[in-house]
Every structure is written in C-alpha cells, then in structure tokens.
Amino acid sequence: MPGLVSYIIVSAALLGIGIYGLSVKRNAIRILFAVELIVNAANLNFVAFARYMNPPKLSGQVIVFYSIAAAAMEAAVGLALILVAFRLNSSIDVRKLNKLKG
Amino acid sequence: MDLSVPPDITFVVLTTITLLAAIMALQAKELIYGAISLGISFIGIAGFFVSLDAPYLGMLQIAVYVGAVVVLILFTIMLVRREEVDKDETGETGESAAGLWLAGLLAVSIAGIAALAGPNLPTTPPEANLPISQLGAVLAGAYPVPLIILALLLSAALLGALVLAKVDR
Image: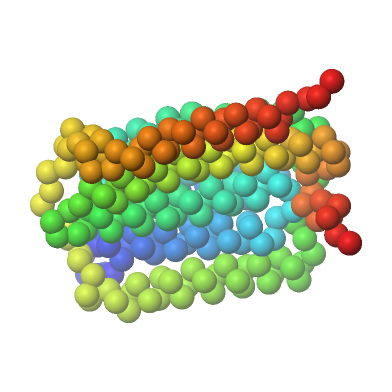
C-alpha cells in the first residue's frame, strides 16, 4: 500500500481538474461534473486520512457516507434546476443565465 | 513519497483510470461521453475506497454515483436539446489558460505541501480490522441523529427536485 502522500497527491490532482472545469466550462451540466469531481477528491482524502490514523478510525468513513448522500441530493436538485433553466431560457450556457443582472 | 520502493501496481492503475477519466469527463466533445467518463472516474474512486479497506463505501460509491447520479445526468442530457448540449462551450483561449493556471497552481501547491510534509506522514497504514458491522454500529450508535436528519434531508431534496422539475399546465 502506498503512503498517505500518494493519496493526497491524487486527490489534489482531482481537485485541480475539478477547479479547472468549474472555472472554464460554460455548460451547466459540465459544471455539475466538475463539482462532483471536487466532492470525490474530498471523499478520497477523508477515507485515506482515516485509514492512516493510528489506530484507524471509522469516523472518516461515516463522514464520506454522509457526503455521498449529500452529493446525490445536490445532483438531483442541481439537475432539476438545470432543467428549469433550460425551460425558461432554452439554453444551459451559464453565461446566458443573466436575468438577475440589473 | 518514498521513491525507492517500487510503486504499487493497483494504485498506479487506479490513479491513471481515475485522472484520465476525470479529464475526459470535462474535455470529451460530446456531453454523453463525458457523463460516461465521469462514471468511469467514480468507479476508479470506488477502487481507491476498496484498496483503503472501505469496501462498503466502494459499494455505496458505485451504487449511488454510478448507479444513480450518472444515470440522472444521462437522462437530463436526453431531456435537454441536443444542439444545446454539444455546443462548443469552453471560453476564449485566455480564459481557458487562466483556468488552467488557477487549477494547476492550486493542485501543485497542495501536492507540494503534502510532499514537504511527507517525512512526517505515515507511509504504511497501521494494521486494521474494520468490519462492516462496526461501521454500522458507529453509524447507528454514535451518530443516530445525523442519520435521521440525512433521511429527512434526502426526502426534502427529492420533493424539491420534483417540485422544481414539474411542468405547470
């Protein structure tokens, strides 16, 4: 099994990919992908840190359990919002969703 | 990271799958392939969970993310018009480069800090015996209230999504 550092580096890379998508992409569904990737990077860190604790703790896994459920909710509500935005605007390009702009 | 020991083959394979699929998820030309790549990336993360002695989480990850979230995304893609979905969506070159810099800087700084702290971080995990039954005991024994709140929250989110997506006639 590799050291804890390896897991942190993988998680950081995943976070970087997610942040890139979040800041560059314009398609709302694509942005949701990026958010899910960031959540997964955080989950990986939780499990890895909990496993490498001495003695290993289960609390990290419990947190990830809640996090997965929360991410599922977020995806459901987010996709419903995207559908509503598409119905109202006939576009899911986030730069075109500027109805709140004065 | 101790470079003198040969890298763990499972770890390398999982890392490659997860990161490549994550990049593909964001860069694939067609959104539907992106969604499938996202599913593959989630499966890679599930593999990490299994390799970290958390098989239950690995199963949950596949059931919830690959089974529910990715399928939900695929259905949404089908409900949104096609030309809208596959439109060229990345911003101007400058914008894209700025995003790349931001993400790269963030990831490299975190990885750098971790590598600097490397000597103080554990390299081998302690011996562990973490049965699933114990996870259940912790979940229901030590954190019963969050579990119930989570259930309520899930129903609320489901109802909210229904209300949002409902078409008024």
